[in-house]
Image (tube, rainbow, N blue to C red; front, side, top):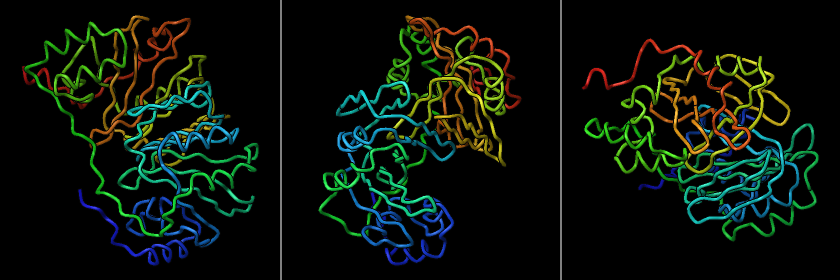
Length: 361
């Protein structure tokens, strides 16, 4: 894979200085570079009130720092959705292929092979220095960010930088070409096997292993499975779900992620604030920012488990990339949540179906 690092750091910094009110992500786009390359260009410079330090990027290193910081804000995003949770990093489980943080407020699944560069960032604001640890993938796109808050252990910051900083503090970063989302992949000749094995699932985590075995992927399987496994919904169904959740006591799990990290919210939805194409959840301890106009395909999905059927609403973008998933929160050891299923059952079907079974069989 080609490495991309053609823009001079001095040119990136000039774009940064010329756009002091824009967010780093937007400045990077304006400069024609990744966000990680922008932060690399600021390494040790103190440009326009921002100073970055290149640090170790693997989950074990970043989590060792996060767990001494106390209350922080965890942020995980993709192109269409930003998921923010306030809490503490506790109960970390390391793994070569997958790592986890498992607690009530911060619930993460991390995939170390995609944690490729990281920075400690200090940014001067009207309210003082804003400190964060930021992790990026091979293309320089955001994987996970940790922002300190007033209640965080700020006294630990310099020690963290001392422990995690790299010998290489250059202002230049090569990145790899960004890989597009995998297009929907299915095999109609294996449809009977898919349906037969789907009925035998005992855990939702078995589903991706099943699709991989059949040389399919998630969205491809949804497009051919048909009832009673899936139902394609109108693209407005996600916004309808969020609005209905504010009117009831039903708790929901919202999964948002990228190739390197998945972040999960468990609880109720209360305060919705739409703004332009964005729908925003602005609850204490949980914020969600969703580009409704990016949603091009939505599916209601039911998977059997040992604890009852797990029902989800899943949204995809125009390239087939997964934007978010929503599940009802299981109670008393059960995945089945009748109130959540009843809500999903009210959602409207699409008028522009992506299903391929009826026309192909």
